[in-house]
Image (cartoon, rainbow, N blue to C red):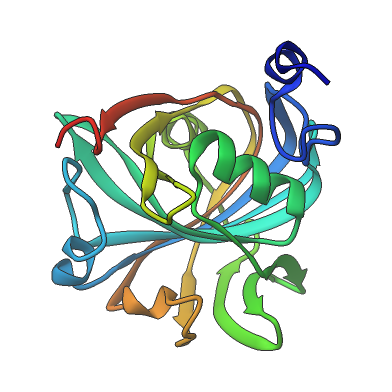
Length: 247
């Protein structure tokens, strides 16, 4: 294989059998269970990188079921998103994500910089309750509950929330373990269709785990719980800040 061949074929690793195909990536019947809670402002300031600014002491804990996604297949993920502002633009900073499928872990980290780790999140319905759980190995990390389709929510408001910009800290190390890439990336969900949206009573419990420290952003008060079913396309990102170039 010549150097020109490498340049022409290189997209993702491994070179001859990439872990995921090129995008765009379309998601059908993507289901969200989102519990928003109030936490300690100092805990948020300790994990949100400048130039992002914390706007409110809130965290969105999201459980997301993706049964039909282009290139990534059938999987579930969960994690924490923090409301932030970047130069006056409101959005969410994706602080942590846990999921159960290798292709979107590799693709999410390598393309956008999603902070993804392997774990076992689940969404299920138990009688009249929508339940989200996150386990790492045999250890429970989070449990969320919400009244199932308890009350219809404003679909336009939910669509705007799904379409809001989000920010990621993309880090790729050099071979000497210093950062080769360290960038703030912005992305959006595109072509969003809301198929259903509900709100209702919700609760969430977080448990301490050394390698999944979601409880470092403790729950002080549950603010809201929503359940959304959508079709959407995951838009490719843009770099808005280069930490290495700014030195």
